[in-house]
Amino acid sequence: MASSMKLRSELNSQKDQLAELKDMIERVRELQENFVENSYDKPSQLRADRWYSSKLADQMKILKARIEFIQKEIDNLNSMTRKDDFKRKKIERLISEANILLQIEKEKDQDKKANFQRPKQS
Image 1 (cartoon, helix red, strand yellow):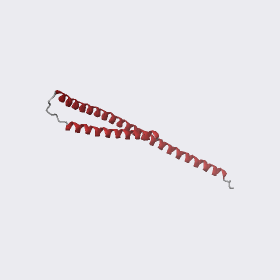
Image 2: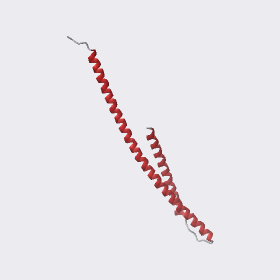
Image 3: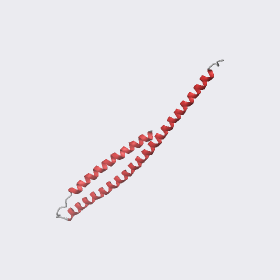
Image 4: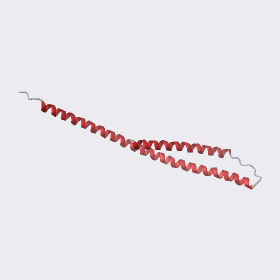
């Protein structure tokens, strides 16, 4: 039960990180769209704009790679959660069946005791 809660907590954490990364990608896209190359008077201005453009492209690659990694983690956690739920349900079913069998045995023992303690009628 504790492992199931831990898995769900980790899954929620990964989903939160994924949402944050998607927001960051959207911001980088906006920056790229708003980036306008000007006519340059100096080569340093051109280099600065190229550097900025290059950094935005690098950030986009990094964010996409992180999203891909987190998506794989989420898929793995979903799989583990399904397996954990299946195991837990199977254990609960086995416990329920064992309790039923114990109850049946208890009732049989009570019937035997009741039959044994009855006086014989002649």
